Image (tube, rainbow, N blue to C red; front, side, top):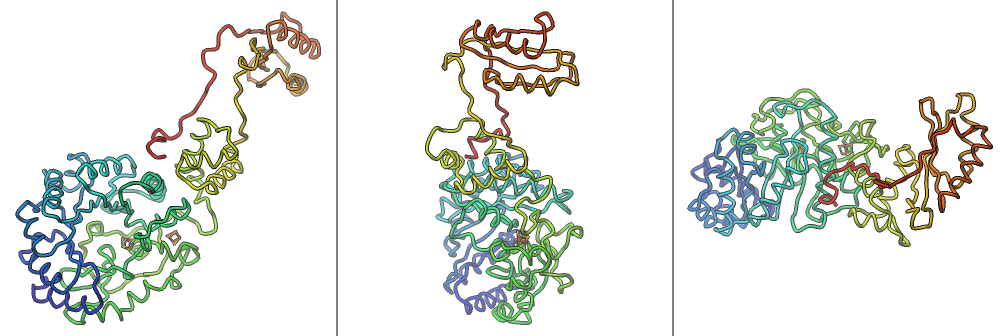
Length: 485
Ligand code: SF4
Ligand code: SF4
């Protein structure tokens, strides 16, 4: 582990590069006795010193000491609003309680707080409940980590990536204009999703910042592009940090989008997303059990840094990702919205898009796609017939032989008084509804239809409407539409 003096020397070399933010993190940085000394030294150099912590050891006196040492902000891990879920994920009973206390202690000491949440499962509701809890504690900044569902995280394949992308989309829409800053992390594809949604936030930066505007110094002095990419770009015990940062071939590779290969290389989003270099380096299968906690010992490069991100379901050049994402959550939101009502205004799509919080061109693009896919066959008004003076109605069933179905159906469908006409797999094979001003008008049309099709009254079911109990049918596709919009 780097000694205190070695840590000071590293801070000197960081300062030679400018005044970047220095995050004292871990593992758990509060396990180091010299944390305040390091913070104080960095602050004295003019660096912005912050920390990342579980909050487990961050009691009131510690918060006060950290503030006095110059710690400006702390990212505290809170993975769920449910203490049992957080404790179980962290593997420590009482961890949730301590994390919440740490947030309060930081607030009290004047240390800014960011909540770091690991999205343990793909559920927007989990994220919303953590944000709601955080807001009640005065927290405005959130980083939501989307771990790859492999290795220790225990998932199985690309359908999980699509689920996470869906959650990212919902969360981006939910917090696009809100009073909190939320950035998905370890999921650089969020920049592609946000771009598609027309969402842009100034502080986001590139999706994957590993080696570009960010790196990690491991406890032994190895510098790696990020904690999840344990490839050593050099060791600060051998080479000054600023030289590693400026001259390492590892960083040079990561900073050049032109070196990306596979679909990331072909992708128009590569400059804003870039794909997770850690996932690309590991490939689809080989995940170490230590990968997820970022504590794997760095080693020399032994893989392809610029390969495609195997976890990304996007195929460059094809807006639809693949078969199982024919509809995504935004499509479902749009289908829900269309079922609710179409406003009688000059620009109904603009009005619905505004209600959903998305740009009108995006809404229209999605509508076209849903139509092309056959998911929307048409958009028609539902008319309240009684209000238009059509007070009577009946449901008619005809026992049409197979070889006459087309002919009889054509005759029936020509009548404007017929609103629905269905073939059914039954002795009564054609069913249609008929409306008119009154019973006499309905009877007149029905008689004419029967005469033209050659059916006698005693062969027909004529089921006049006695009372309308339900005429409005909707299929809710996204239960939380209101929250998301
Ligand atoms: S390599 Fe992956 S985990 Fe690391 S910064 Fe990039 S996106 Fe995040
Ligand atoms: S293909 Fe690569 S660059 Fe394009 S969105 Fe996917 S991960 Fe990002």
